[in-house]
Image (cartoon, rainbow, N blue to C red; front, side):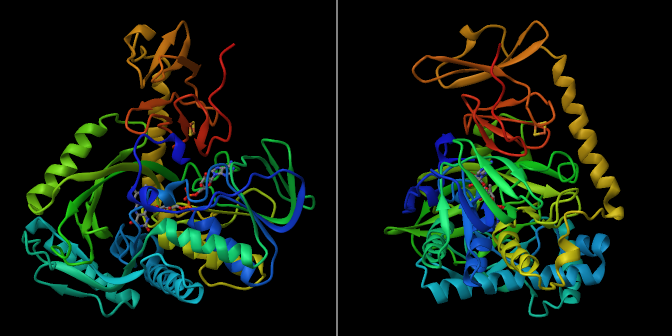
Length: 506
Ligand SMILES: Cc1cc2nc3c(=O)[nH]c(=O)nc-3n(C[C@H](O)[C@H](O)[C@H](O)COP(=O)(O)OP(=O)(O)OC[C@H]3O[C@@H](n4cnc5c(N)ncnc54)[C@H](O)[C@@H]3O)c2cc1C
Ligand code: FES
């Protein structure tokens, strides 16, 4: 998703200084072509360039214009789907590798920041998982035991998290977590990739992605990149029609950034055990801190009540942190939730051996994206990596069949939208800045009235697999409720799995 799509910008977008990159103007050749300049794509590019491989990175927006610009950037090995649950699906060894890989990812980010002297406010902090309801006390005990079985022995139970303004109740303390400014980090990676000979092109949409002997990537303005290896790091793969998209589901999550006196809340990462859960951290801004609070998740395209969700987040925050002042930032974004909890990183299923993907961030895309960089670099360089099987995109976790089925029944239910009435009967009902789906005969039309009054009309049928899109009034996007494709108000594709715009009307 590109930053020009958003009516709501993150604190990082407001405070980053990301140098603009040129668009691709001519055919070029490289060892590895990476599509997507978020944390997954840029970490992979950086590590490969460090090993002397020639890399080209393409992004159809600016660097970091996707979810990495909308994150809250907790870097954590406290797994948000819980190690108890990972063990049930992937066994004790799977949970152990999960913990080890996320720990290694935080260490890797720290090492890169140090070696490249990236000024991105990287900071080691504790993390606290607290249980607001006494009913969740057992959940903490079970999670502590499972976490210890993964080898994270320094995690401990404490009477409460170190917040003075309210009693969190018992909590698990995870030492040596981290936070940073994600766009400043990407900016540092970009400079290092260029120094090592890598080439980055922004505003360059990859239209066709072909692996095999004649591997190449075609771009929307014509130039072609030929290469030995392709990495698709577009948050959700745009080169995979079905295989991955039946195994993960898109969720929208909301964030507010509230001004708060410096030092009035202990710098740490905080999460509660609710579902959806709240996630909290601090960021310095000029003479004060910003308390960043996220939550209120729902399946993409299946709710359009962001104002209420922001209001609930604000109320939750003010009740617990009465010292907060103005709400300075409100933003939202999308996370991909794999049915069996772990990211999909490796060879693209049913494709040539030289096409790789990274997806399935599960709200832990800072570490999953870094794991992708480490793992894909090993696979591309022909090295063994004992994380490969756990993260394989081809895996089918039999114990998660119920979860797969649940998500796919939900997707099937979205096709009922074909026969429902539209949201409006006439474009006259639209105010400037509003969009809605309208029925015309048998067709569903996505209609948007721009601020200047101009009307934009496209088919409301998502070109991925044909679900009807919904209007997202906060982000001013069309969101597909099936697998999370997003389009600008005018119908331009921002987020996969679709890779083409909403169809023009005849
Ligand atoms: C509100 C919010 C809070 C979050 N909080 C956390 C957190 O605290 N900790 C954490 O670990 N994770 C968190 N996440 C998740 C994390 O931000 C993401 O998982 C991560 O940033 C994804 O990185 P990525 O590189 O995979 O994708 P992105 O950053 O989305 O990058 C993909 C890039 O691909 C480009 N692209 C797409 N299609 C094409 C195409 N056809 N051609 C060219 N380019 C293309 C896009 O423009 C984009 O720049 C959060 C996410 C959100 C939305
Ligand atoms: S994203 Fe799959 S049908 Fe729209």
